[in-house]
Amino acid sequence: MAEDSKRRVFVSRRIPENGLERLRTLCDVDIWEGDLPPDRETLCTRAAGCHGVLSMLSDAIDPDFMDRVGPQLQVVSNYAVGFNNIDVEEATRRGIRVGNTPGVLTDATADIAFALLINCARRISESERSVHDGKWKTWEPLGFIGLDLVGKTIGIVGLGRIGQAMARRCHGGWGMDVLYTSRSSKPEAEGEFDADYVSMDELLTRSDFISVHCDLNNSTSGLFDASAFQKMKSTAVFINTARGSIHNQNDLAAALTNGEIAAAGLDVTDPEPIPADDPLLDLQNCVVIPHIGSATVDTRAAMADIAAENVLRALADEPMPHCVNPPS
Ligand SMILES: NC(=O)C1=CN([C@@H]2O[C@H](COP(=O)(O)OP(=O)(O)OC[C@H]3O[C@@H](n4cnc5c(N)ncnc54)[C@H](O)[C@@H]3O)[C@@H](O)[C@H]2O)C=CC1
Ligand SMILES: O=C(O)C(=O)CO
Image (cartoon, rainbow, N blue to C red):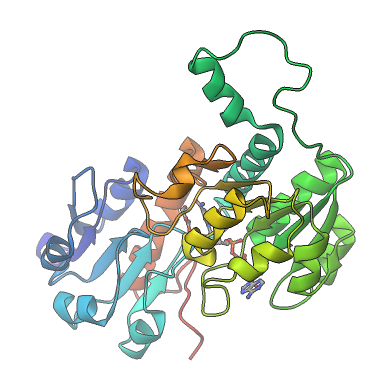
């Protein structure tokens, strides 16, 4: 492609260099270099006139954004598997293709979900804080008593790619029984994990651990509210590595405070970042980490490759590796 006919692409944060190099071979690339996301005005202004936008999950890609970027916009490639920040229906209506990065982050994210699960069960963060605070006086016969995993029941909400990777860890590694809810039953997964497809109520009442792996959509927003937490065992542990608005944060804080559930581990909150005065941060039985599910060297590099390839393919009017527009 001649230099002056290069398509313009805006990348809304620095991503691994392999992805940027790939884009630069064919495109004129502008990158927001800030450590924090660009504010709304900057995002819209910098993307205006571009043919492609490589977006982050923190960017709201809505009709107003699309208007302000202009009618030449051909592709929005999210640097994430989740795409709840993008109005895909509106993009599709305007002929804008939307891409995501599934698969390559599945194991990294399931590892973080499992790490949170074992952390909460064995009170690792809580006990580590006590060491740092100088409170470790002796070996404690009754101190920091936690929960076993082997032989317990894990309830997986959303047995998709990451849900299955979590089930594999829990069933194959720790011999846990697997219950799951999903949009539909998954007979092949039932075979691999000896899993039972159950109603949400049954999953809530029977599980010792619950791990959320569904995408954020109309049916999952606020799914874990006061009534869901009340149905769970008082010894149960709640893990969410999917999206923060799948749980109601005030209801979760109340459930943890009142002993309706035992502990929670969150990689995602609503909003992100979680405000410093959020009641969850005062609770010893809640572990919060800053949305690091996919944050490994290899995973982020693989996401960068796919995100760049999605842009290049769409601009060449070729099939994208991962396109989320509904088939026309
Ligand atoms: N913490 C992190 O850094 C990361 C978080 N994620 C989150 O994890 C989500 C899942 O990713 P994948 O497993 O790759 O997606 P996926 O599309 O393979 O799996 C999602 C599953 O949720 C199910 N689902 C949808 N609505 C449901 C409902 N109402 N009840 C029960 N199940 C429902 C779907 O049927 C599907 O099986 C992403 O959408 C994203 O939000 C993904 C990667 C990293
Ligand atoms: O991919 C996603 O959806 C994330 O949340 C971060 O990788």
